[in-house]
Length: 346
Image 1 (cartoon, one colour):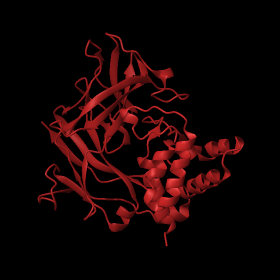
Image 2 (cartoon, helix red, strand yellow; image 1 turned 180 degrees about the vertical axis):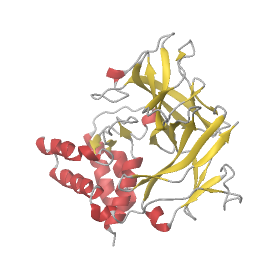
Image 3 (cartoon, helix red, strand yellow; image 1 turned 90 degrees about the vertical axis):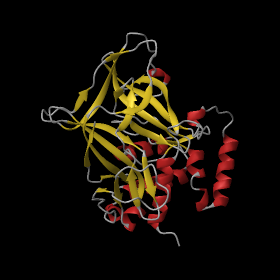
Image 4 (tube, helix red, strand yellow; image 1 turned 45 degrees about the horizontal axis):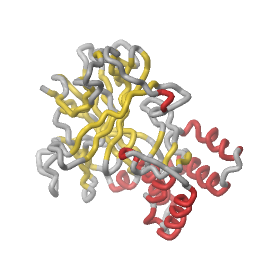
C-alpha cells in the first residue's frame, strides 16, 4: 500500500515541477500552477483517474494560447498550497467563500496541514551534508561534472523534492553576496550523488554577473528572475535558458522582458511591463549573505541601455573568491543547505 509520505512526495514533486505563475525572488509565492500539467505529472499514480480528469479540463477550457516558454500551460490555473505557508489559511478561506469545489478544498487543506504538521516534519532528515572534492571519475558518463559532490543517504534522497547549486561572491570589504541558484548540476541516481558543473561561469546581464533565481524548470527550458533597479525603482528581468543541442553549450539564453515589482501584481503582468528606452539605468541587486556593515543588499555597477537592449549570456565570473554549495528542497517545501567550498576564479 502507498504510505502517507509517498503520497506527499508524489504531490510535492509534481507541485514543484508543474508550470507555475507569479513567483518572484524575495516575495511570497502566489502558489498558482497549471492544473492540467499538475495532474499530468502524476499520471502514473492512477492512469484511469488522471485520464478522466485531464479530459474534463480539456472540455472546460474553451480557448487558450501559450507561447514556447509556456508550453506546459493548458488554460486553467489553480491555487495549490506549497511555498507560501503563512498565507495558507487566508487563501484557502477564499475558496470556501466562493462556493468552490468542496472536495478540492478538503484535499488542498489536508495537504497544507501536512506541510506544517510536526508529526511529519520530525521525520525529515537534517541534510547536514558535507561537500567533497572528487579526485575520481564518477560512475557512468558524466564528462561535464566539476570537482565537487555531495552524497545523500537513502533517507535524504527519499525526502528530496528538488536540488540546486548556490553561489556566493566575496567582496573586498568581506561581504558575501548571493548570486542566486541554478540547476546546472549532474545527478547520479544510482548512488544518491550530486555533482557540480561549476567551472567559473555564471549568468550575466549585459556583461555583469547577476543574482539569477530559477522560477521554473522543464525539460525544454529554465526560466529565471533577476532583481535589478530600473532608473532607481525595483524591477525584475525575466529570461530563460533554452535547451538546444544545436548550440555548442547545449542551449542559449533569451531575454523575456523587464517588469516593475510590487505587492499587488506579479511579473509578467502587463500592468508592470516596462518599455526599455536607450539611456535607461539598470543596476543589478544582490542579497547579502554576510556583510561587515549589516547591509541587507548590495547594488552592482549601473549600466545604461543602448541599442542592444538587455541580453543574457553564460560567461566567466570576475576574478575573485566564491562560495559554492547545494540547496535542497524537501517534499514539505523546506530548504536545507550543504556545506560550501570556497572557489577561486581567475
